[in-house]
Image (cartoon, rainbow, N blue to C red; front, side):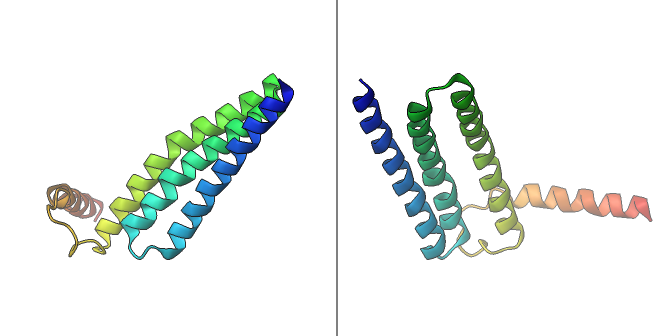
Length: 124
């Protein structure tokens, strides 16, 4: 049974490493922010989860596996938030303005600008 778990662990670690490598290559090779953001979040998190699963099969200790689970949950929670913030920043910097078919954030940006203008006027 130990040999079987070692083989499964090795496969998971190699698959996770391969996904993390493709994510890193994608961040370097892709040209625009949205493609880089996609590459930096989806395969990176999947690769990390696979590598953590492989490491947990190797370690098999409750405290070690618990820390790996906390690490995986933290990555799954924070990656979409970071991608959302990067997308908003790219929109705000108008890097994506010519590529958008439908601009759903235009109204939101206008409200934000009016709110900032009103707050600046109050502070003066």
